[in-house]
Image 1 (spheres, rainbow, N blue to C red):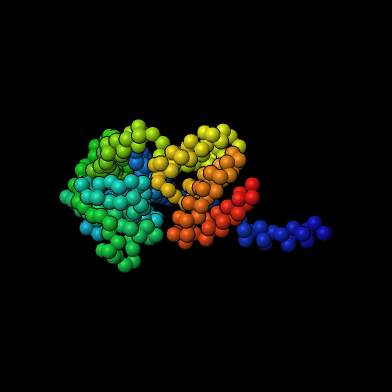
Image 2: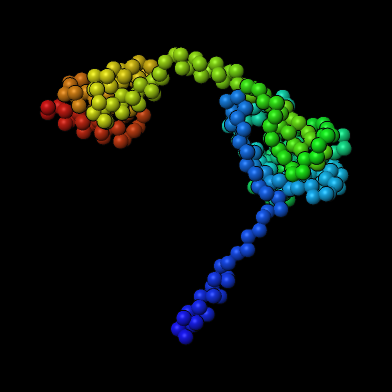
Length: 279
C-alpha cells in the first residue's frame, strides 16, 4: 500500500517533467570553413523541399527572406574581408536576402538576434548589401544549403542553394598580406613581449637566472623602459643577490610608475628598495 502511495505521488511530477522529443523539421547546422588564414562560421537551419515549389511560391519573390528557417542565418568572420569587392569587418552578421526571378539582393545585418526577419528593419544595421544573379542547377538541392566552394588561398564563393536555384557571392581576403606579415614577424625574431614573458617564466620557476636576465635586458632594449619590465628585472636581480643592481632597477621602475600613477608598482618598489637597502 505504501509503495502504491509513493508511486501515486511521484507519477504526476514525472509526467510534468517528461518531454516528447521529435526530429526538427528544419535541422540546425553549423559549419566552419577556413579560407586562407581566415575562419568563417555559418549557422543556419535546413528546411527541405518536400515536393514544394520554393522560389516564387514558398519563398515569395521580391520580399525579404530570413535565408533559411527558424532563427536568421548567421555568418561569423575572424578577419577583415571583401564581399564582392566591398569591405566588411570581423564579427557576426545575419544574412538576409530578397530573391527575385532574375536577381537577388543580399544583406549582411549587424543584429543577429532575430527569429526570422526583424520586426523593424534598420538601414543603419546593414553592414553590407549587394546583388547576385541566380542560376538554375541541373540537380535539385533537397535541403536548403549555405556553404563555400571554389576555395583558394585568398578567395572563395559563398553559395546559397535550394531546389533548382543557386546564387554565388564572391569572397576575397588579404591572405597574401597576412602571410607576409607573419613571415616578417617570425623572421625578425622574438618580440619584446616574448623575451619578457620567457624571462619572467624562468625567474618564477627557478630556472637559469642568467639566461632570464639576458632576455629581460633584450625586452627592455626592444620595448624601451617600462616600469613593469624594470620591476621584474629588479626582482630577478634580487634573486641573483645583486641588490645594488636591483635597487637601481627598482628606483627607475618607481620613477616611471609615479609618472603613470600606478600605485601598486609605486608601493611595491618602495617596499623592495627599503628591504634591499639593508642587505
